[in-house]
Image 1 (cartoon, rainbow, N blue to C red):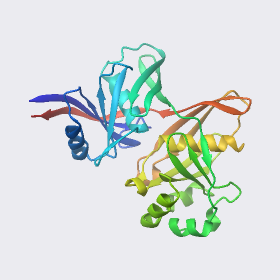
Image 2: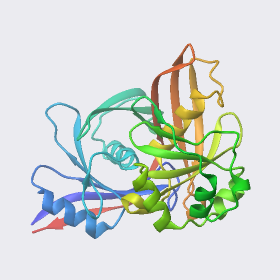
Image 3: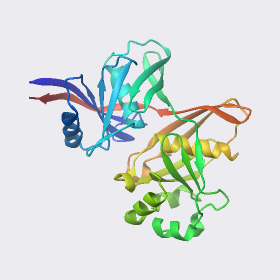
Image 4: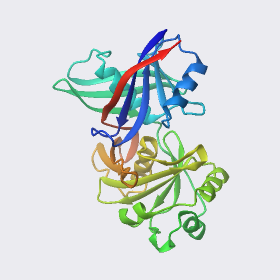
Length: 299
């Protein structure tokens, strides 16, 4: 028999039953790819992370959905780092520590802020924002989202944005409308595939540094993601680029709330470092909490 520590960690929250849950397996190289797939399928979460040894970074992480291995997952990364911290595997004192992770997309720099022995937040460096235009067919989008097109904020251009994944940023007039949306997921899936996007990221602006969002990604098998790191990071990058967020300071922290419609509220922190109004570095992250821990037994 082989035994491995396993945890279920809720990311982007410090409250159990909230945020975005991920499985975390603290394993080693004895686990085969086939075994990882079976474990992820058995757990059934959108992503499960496997923490392994690395000869070029502090740790190696492999990510699996119930169907397949994927290159990277933000909330599972936060969950993994929280699990490692909780296990005492990082050996860190108070301050900000840089932990380098070996992933399929390269070395990922993450930063843990520790205060009075507790982990305050985990931030992940993202790719610099990129943008693509899209035809503003509000009638078609209204049909997909099952809403009247008067609920779009047409003063903010539709845009496809990227800090790791290409997502369509859809501005809605307020959070109440966002919460009431019930999309046609088949139409949304087809539209996403036609336009080469991963998700519809709906948002409203509730103040200069506060956003409210929902994320739908049927094109990759996730009708709705509870709380989404990369998409909120791309959204902040876009809003900064068009001057809808204040960038008079060299550093800006924006909070996005998400997950309320699924009864899993969470908070995403996006931090941008700016120089003369241009983004030089952008990070996304949040808090985490362990919901369940135990032992995985394999023959």
